[in-house]
Length: 165
Ligand SMILES: CC(C)(COP(=O)(O)OP(=O)(O)OC[C@H]1O[C@@H](n2cnc3c(N)ncnc32)[C@H](O)[C@@H]1OP(=O)(O)O)[C@@H](O)C(=O)NCCC(=O)NCCS
Image (cartoon, rainbow, N blue to C red; front, side, top):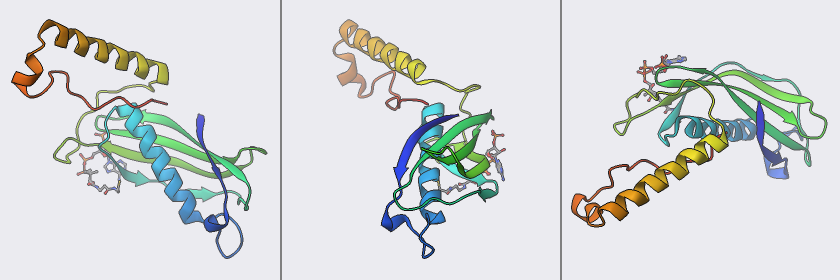
């Protein structure tokens, strides 16, 4: 599991008990998980479909630094399932776990669409693919400079690649 994102617990993140407010933490987790799914599926149109029970194991206090960890546990046809853990960065004490978060890959009409992925992709693979696409596009422009203007749209028009996890 990769722990990419760190958060510094500030006064505005606290509940009346003086510990980290669960709602703030869940917002951070949902965003982190969505970014993970976007990077893995190479599509910005992903939505949260399902979250299993959330186990708040221990609390965090003002000034604590926490880190959010994600890993993909299953690649379905249109969905991806993630596991999440949040822990204290310094002590490594677990704060929360979510065994199952399901995101669905959507097409332009908002319908579930097959994503074609079967395994975790790493950042260097995503970067290599990005380079390959850029070079292919550059070669196409060099070979037929007027084609983009005439066609109105690039042949290989895909969303810009995100850095994958
Ligand atoms: C996401 C949405 C389009 C899926 O529609 P749907 O009719 O459930 O689609 P499907 O039945 O084809 O299921 C799509 C995928 O989700 C999975 N899925 C559906 N319900 C599930 C559940 N309760 N638990 C786990 N996975 C589930 C299916 O197994 C399928 O995955 P697969 O193709 O990898 O097997 C629709 O439910 C929706 O728009 N929900 C609202 C999403 C949202 O607004 N989220 C919050 C903001 S991001």
